[in-house]
Length: 287
Image 1 (tube, rainbow, N blue to C red):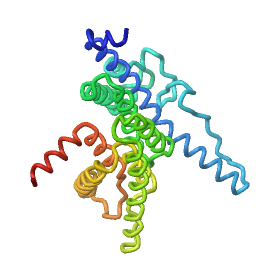
Image 2 (image 1 turned 120 degrees about the horizontal axis):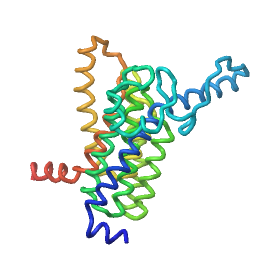
Image 3 (image 1 turned 60 degrees about the vertical axis):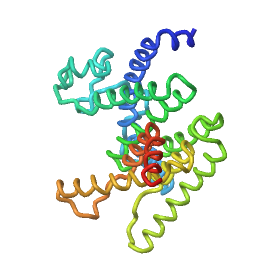
Image 4 (image 1 turned 90 degrees about the vertical axis):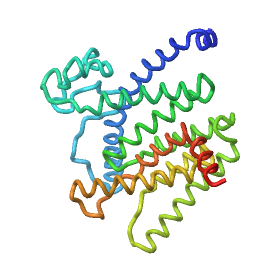
């Protein structure tokens, strides 16, 4: 039945993916907002336990499912019809139904971005075994981008999940062979770790966090070694250019920390879709 739909009714499949990815985009907004809060609460509890002190700050327990969606400003629970991806934002004119506080444009943007990237992945990989893994990878990368932008944090639950997902995909040789994936994963982590240790030795500055190492290792698990120089080079160049522009516009010092994870994630998306074309173009340029 599914094969017949893919063969004779591809428009139905694309429509289904569009609707599913919009719903996923709404879920990603929840994860981006709540996961850092959950991690901070967990770390604070562990610190209090380690120091044998009582945590005096009483916070409402929050997880990815409870309490139900609420307005961050007035804390009023959002009804189902106010939580429809993109449409509710347009209907509410970008404001909370209750307190009229502006709703960030980022919510519908993430939903739209998730849908567009999912549809492009469906076209790029067609309805093959690569597609479900690619979709899951894209959704994790979107989440990592915005969490890192907000908190300069790359949660292990996401980076390591992405790493294991890549290794599982490559047990079927979907993106590269499994031996290459495993060796590239280890090599990516060690090479970036050594580079940053040398950078600290010569400059006395910490160039990036361990979350970036794990994220780069995940890309090794997905694509193998051949795309790693491309990802690192592109992310470094774009990170430097955008970082300089940002520091000049905001009048901040050069010591201001800028998250590197988003540049790595965007570079990985470029490698996923156009990596082969870029590498072939580069080789033809010199040969």
